[in-house]
Image (cartoon, rainbow, N blue to C red; front, side):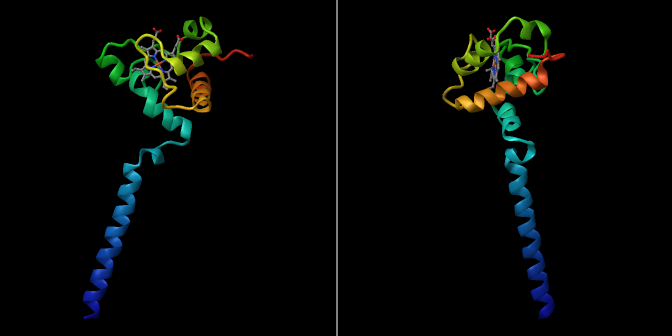
Length: 124
Ligand code: HEC
């Protein structure tokens, strides 16, 4: 009798830990180190690619030609404010994000792509 009880408790414990593992596996935010990394993956990487090279799956598939955020020409030809404005209001094939992301989140994303994708950062 006690053995049956132990088996039931064992099965219960196993299924609970499996459920917890499943929840963690399903919630994508647990896979990213920070909120901004998660936002990039969720909102931007589909077009600009995980490494910012403009080769995300949606961008390639739909031939949207997302900007390559990793070239010197890209960063030299544009001001920070202009780029933040493009994220907020959209540009050509790029959708506007004011509806999905607060100003602060947009600025954090901009800082993220600047720090991670811009080649040989200048001092400014
Ligand atoms: C649906 C695809 C798509 C998504 C999603 C997308 N972009 Fe873009 N993005 C583009 C395209 C296309 C361009 C090129 C626009 C142009 O220069 O005509 C672009 C250009 C840019 C530029 C350069 C704008 C400029 O003024 O030259 C920045 C910065 C940028 N994207 C950042 C982001 C960020 C940050 C996100 C996520 C919040 C994002 N993009 C999501 C398609 C996308």
